[in-house]
Length: 249
Image (cartoon, rainbow, N blue to C red; front, side, top):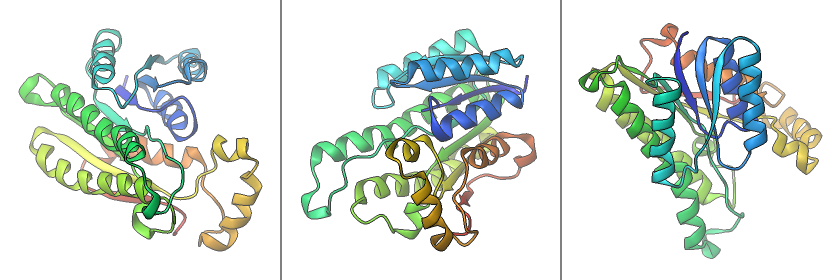
């Protein structure tokens, strides 16, 4: 086995693709989910059926108690975590700044920022050689929105992703001497089931022809490959990097 990887928000979309890719690459995988239990369990079963090892663990990324419980469950079921992909994220209703609501801000920052920090805290405590670990890798999933700022009406979401970018740079320096690498991926337009459910998948493809230099939207597997690579030995000299995977956009 390559190690133990936790993928938050892995019940669908990019998170599911990362979990499956990790399983194919020999990781023991924790498929975290908040509400998508059946999908998460199906992903864990797919990894197991291919000869890997995986468990689905429910935990709300807005709850410190849930996060601590999840890590303890993984300690017992899979062992000490060596790779963490902070993928879980939510959005709130689109509003201009003049109409922004505090409850929306509290909810989105609780998951997209505070949850990432708390998961990273728990992972670092287990990866640190000072606490019996052997190092590891952490990958934050941000968004190209934090770089190009084109999501009008999405200031709260964009702000949370900008926070991940800055967090990556400081966290990487802080834990580098502990043999822990911290990197960030900023996906662009990615075809996930969100677009399929809204009937906008084909519209997204058309939009990408003119808005994305490469001429198409990305696939979840393309983000997954980048995330698993950043956790691998092949990326052993990469830390504090913000990797844009957006087709040039």
